[in-house]
Image 1 (cartoon, rainbow, N blue to C red):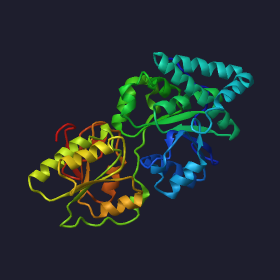
Image 2: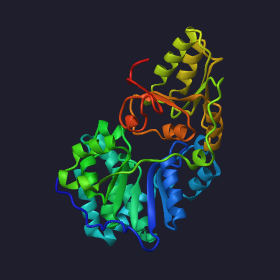
Image 3: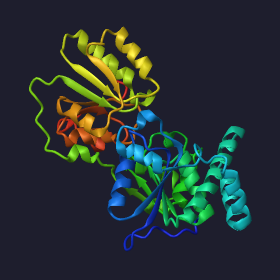
Image 4: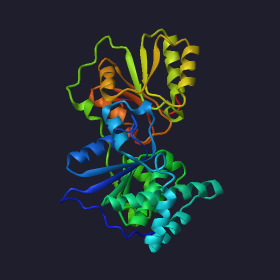
Length: 368
């Protein structure tokens, strides 16, 4: 792999920076890490311009911050998709060498197949629009909080504009198709690549040339500040509620959790299980709850904001979070910040956080 970038690394100090953040969908209720970083950078005096490919839906707008961020964010597809071809034409005429280099990079990193090529063409057009916006706003550095499609746009926009880019790799999705998303190429061309766990870093090392391993930096995501704002209360002796927080989707192993709840109920143990979140499997999960006769014990609430989750955790006995695929769930950190033990799954970066017998318990991923 011989890709290079003529963009300079981001400065490490001195005057405030003009920084751009790019996401696939922003802001979302589940994106605690992105929200914390944007807020912290602004508090340090940097100006952060937020870009996203698509808008988050109304169900994700759980705080005033989410609503104000959505209003201030530039949406490449949702709001400007008809302008992207014009941006590409302007770039081709105004900077033909950069345009040609960016187009060659897009062609070289496209996944096989016509469908993938069409998606890559869309990413290239979005990158042309983003490159123009970065130049217009005098952005000095572009960061992307994902390694898949929006990072493809970021890499191409960097090549088209000369603005250096970096990305945060969470996993697990990109490790299922690293060649499709040109992970190695992105690491090589990035100014640096943030990995949220040592496990994530190890997976990136598989696809990056050894000489680029120093670019891989482990930066752990932190809990939402709302969970650190007060002294944790002790677990009540009669507390019987367990809390789960996340997206109700295939990776989160909700059927495993509900089957475990059914077995515990059949053993005659008294408990409550509160699932905070939403997602494509919510309806099927609610049907499973009813069919198992758990409606009086198990409830799915939909999304809540951080303060509402704090209130629910304060009366809980602990956090339970099985999973089939993960990076490192921020909700485990948030539970620990409130001195609540965690039951989770022995996969990915979770064992770096949950220490069995000390702050929680770990089980095999498929073990009910």
